[in-house]
Length: 195
Image (cartoon, rainbow, N blue to C red; front, side, top):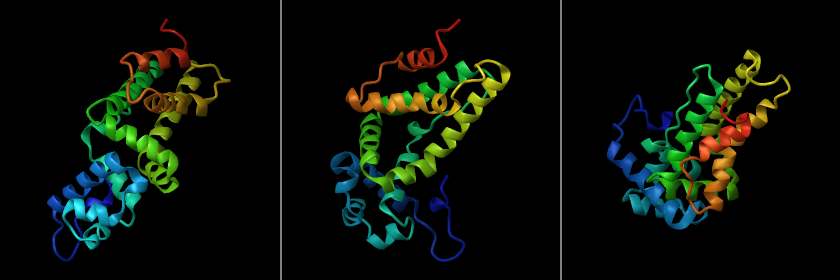
């Protein structure tokens, strides 16, 4: 969890109700008007707080939006490492698909679309979400190569990044519709059909 939600050492205690109101307002505005259309003033008004309350917690609009996305439980992505690349990759992609196509689908679709247009939002998302997931995928693909599960000539970076990229692309191209069998199809495409 980001340190932005941890209590401060001194001063008045943080209000979890205020935190929640700000994060909920950020999600609502992201879906309604997009990141570019969202201002800190509008965010404060929607949350029923002053702008200072937001800036005491987060230093930028991008940080608020990414934290809001992070606090949605269904947006948590599983990162298993069982030693079976096919099973682990399938579990990760299924977790991503559920996050993108579930009740939070409109939020994820708005976010994927907006981060493509706003470098500051993309950078914050990369810092909070993608860097850990990319490192995990890179590690499990590298270990699969070392075990002989994949050829030594495997482009580890490409295999590690392809699955999540395909899901994000299809989310936008197909207006939020991600077929249930899509993770399996992607895994079969990347690793070959299940033996």
